[in-house]
Amino acid sequence: MATQAFEDIAETFDFLDDWEERYRHVIELGRAMPPMDPALQVPATKVEGCASQVWIMPRIENGRFDFQGDSDAMIVRGLIAVLHALYSDVPVAEVGRIDAQAELARLGLDEHLSSQRSNGLRAMIQRIRQLSADAA
Image (cartoon, rainbow, N blue to C red; front, side, top):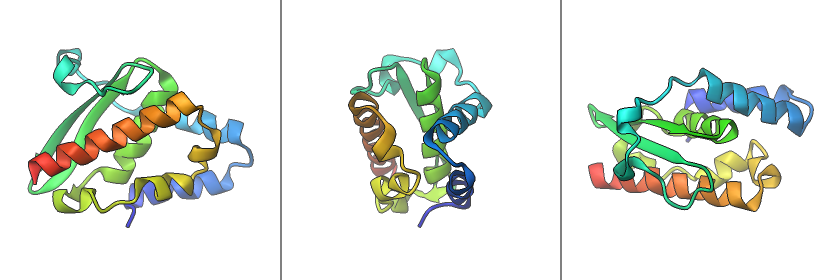
């Protein structure tokens, strides 16, 4: 059920030999992501439960989910970019049906993130799911 953008990331990960290369690729994805307007980095868009500062601002257009996100940590910006690839342009009603943990496990992220980063990633997924449920 993953988007083509996420499938492209998964395919790239298949070609990368080790976790360090994958880690660098996640950081590159974060660097390539457009920065979020600092005016949107407010308590209402902040994701609680992350060790780093994380903000997610939803955009719903024509019944499809999208979001802007940002973080003060480059690896977390990369994780936001991965989540963006997973959820962007998905019908709002289908966002909650995506098994994010299973999709991210395909990338091996669950095995290589610290417990704090894993908790933060789960918090971001929960926030995205809640935002889409509120919009439905």
